[in-house]
Length: 293
Image (cartoon, rainbow, N blue to C red; front, side):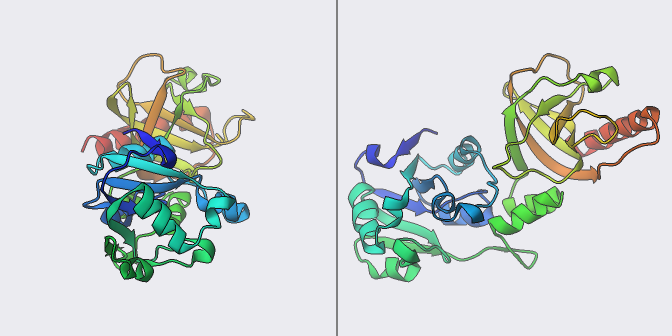
């Protein structure tokens, strides 16, 4: 789905869902349900207003756009967010953006959505406007736990990707271009596709995971290691190393997307290379069972 910047949005009546939508979790999906347009902010408002408090993002722009498109949304519109825009009052945001640019007939937000200068606007203010219908989505709970991006970030950092997936409604996704490595995995009989995590984005805690890896449009079962490889002195820092099960081919330089299904174990140092290899093959067997189930 194509991203349109706000000044370039074509005039037409819209059913608009408004929010940052980082993570595209079940709560966000409820906000978007029934909308034909998603209106969001780029960059994340906290990156402009309080960069010291900026959380790690759960989605790349490409992942977010794909997830939004899967909901049947026709258009993704981004507002270039800067301090000038942040200074707009709630009334100006409604008049200039929602009514003026979006020609909104329906506006959908989450119940805790705030907007405008000093967060002066909320769902109650939107409901007071008669130019459009306002739809307010309640917070979503799963197993007694409120679905939120902050909670999902905490679960992912702790390696609890299966629990995070319940709140997301899907596995947590990472993507990137495969980087050249030191070929250590190939030497051990288990070649890997290596990603260097972007520090601006969330990354699962150190450990080994069952996953799916999508490359060239095809999905493969995989065992994925996240960590610093304590058995070897690589000096490379944090790496995501994905072994695609029953796959052969050169992946260097290709974009891949990793869907984390379940954590198999934590990262640890082994007594010998032989013990490490034995455990790696056990990890692959377990990952295969989970990923192809």
